[in-house]
Amino acid sequence: MSLFWRIFSLNAVGLFVAAALLLGPVTVSTPVLPGEALAVVGGLVGLLAANALVLRVGLAPLKRLGGAMSTADLLRPGARAPVAGPAETAELITTYNTMLDRLEAERATGAARALSAQERERHRVAQELHDEVGQTLTAVLLQLKRVADRAPRELREEVGQAQEATRAGLDEIRRIARRLRPGVLDELGLSSALRSLAAEFTTHGLTVRHQIAGDLPHLTEESELVLYRVAQEGLTNTARHAAADRAEIRLRPVADGVELLVRDNGRGVGGAPEGSGISGMRERALLIGAVLSVGSAPDGGTDVRLSVPFTAVGGP
Ligand SMILES: Nc1ncnc2c1ncn2[C@@H]1O[C@H](COP(=O)(O)OP(=O)(O)O)[C@@H](O)[C@H]1O
Ligand SMILES: [Mg+2]
Image (tube, rainbow, N blue to C red; front, side):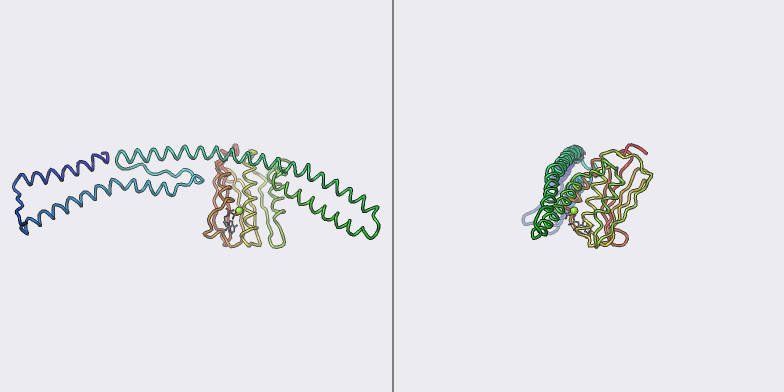
């Protein structure tokens, strides 16, 4: 029954009963006698209680819908409000669920577009850094070497320092370019790229181990990129926030796909709100239908787990 008819019929029943009683045997005298007052107050209380009950039951689905709306998160898709209640409410909930379907689909295509634009742009910047700035610095380095060969003794040290600085700049640019565009991914594939990532993040205070299965199923280019970027962001977070001394990248085949685990033994995420890094990982995961979870590791650090289903990697 619709909410309108529920409320209307309840009110109608109350008014009918009141009218029938007035027309019938009941009289209310002035001034009111105690017995009559008691009957009127009792009737009123009964009517109000019935009214409250019907409204509460009728409006409960709306309240649940409100709750579902306030916790909806497009980065964790799939949650829907249960369709229940009077006709209008049920229709409203259905409409809301359909709207979520649409928003999630739009979000996924929008994110795909934005991320591929971002990858293209990174590629371009990396290429330019490598080709333009890198070549120029290489030329400067050669020139400095020629100058050093012919420079008088008192200038040699300074020229040597300039060479050192240029070489450091060149290394830095190569490093930035590599980070922007995981060239190793194209050249050597995911396993090597992850190994070099582990090496890159290994510093004085942090040892990153890797455990990459040899019998991985074939992965699409897109899912390799997502796996790589998630590992990269996971390790960046470890280096930046965890204060860990050990971390690990693990990639292995599982029953229904492959699973990437980035684990550290640091202080753990705790209640820290998710920033652009973690939501970026979620967005990338959505692109290939993978599921990302960020939780605490068995020994108190952080676990970032990405489960990529076969549907994304193109079968076993
Ligand atoms: N491995 C980690 N160890 C400890 N804290 C973490 C780790 N990863 C993430 N965090 C916490 O979660 C927050 C959100 O991370 P993220 O979304 O990547 O944003 P950002 O790195 O830009 O701060 C971080 O600010 C940090 O407090
Ligand atoms: Mg981060």
